[in-house]
Length: 382
Image (cartoon, rainbow, N blue to C red):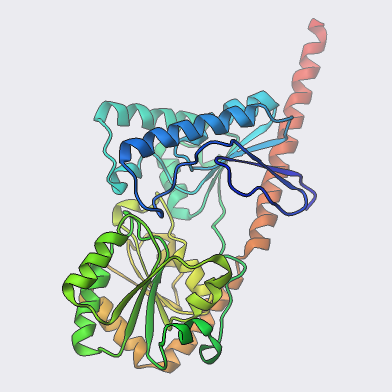
């Protein structure tokens, strides 16, 4: 779309990128996120702070850019966005994937109350200084506005499913063959088993299904801080209908997501407006219905009209009944799968890029006009 993009990333990972995009790495030891094996929380906090400082220093040394975009990993990096933008004479845009520090208690990180209040005030002040804030859901936009970010500066731009995800026919799916699923009705939870995604209701429903419908296969695919506890619970409870599989590489997402007849997603109700689970979008892009255990006001719940169902986060019996309903009704699965593809195709990477480019160009032009006005005002004093 005519933009030259520089990505500033921490660590020493790969820097290959498509034409028009250059990657500048800090060379530091990037902290792993919670999808990886967890470290000592104190080391993780120090690692994130050190990573943020490296990113800021690297961004300040870049040549001039028109728009500076900050993300929410590491947390509170957005506080530095206006500073980096001022260095470049650029517009500042914060792309909010999560809302920190409000999300920290949900993740089990409890700061002392005075520090929490100070961090929240600093975060809101920084967001109010940005020229624009992108929220990945309506619920998040409402949360940001309630915190004090001017509503006119907030743009809702949902995340999109990985473009590599597509429906793979059941009979032709190598993932089903590799895992000997045969003709079994298969339910999958695929993605991060993080602290904001409760897993106990899924295991409790699996225990009910093990007694009533043992032929139903349940796949738990992914990593995260809950994974070890989930593996221990599966073994301790003797859930032979549950299999744990590692996080799948991106080039196998289409096969792994299509291997399921039905998908599951969960979210801690306290996280409403603080994050939007991406599992739902991936399931729909594979043409599969999805059951979501989470708050009714979440954007994930809104996506499932006609292609899934939202249940209360602790509705174990309802979850087991919904799984049985889909398992016994192939016509329902087909109708909801078709609707899922329609929903997913309405918002893809290309549509998101167009919206983002329009927003970035608007910010660039506004910044240029502002600079022109300031130069004009300075002439009488020259």
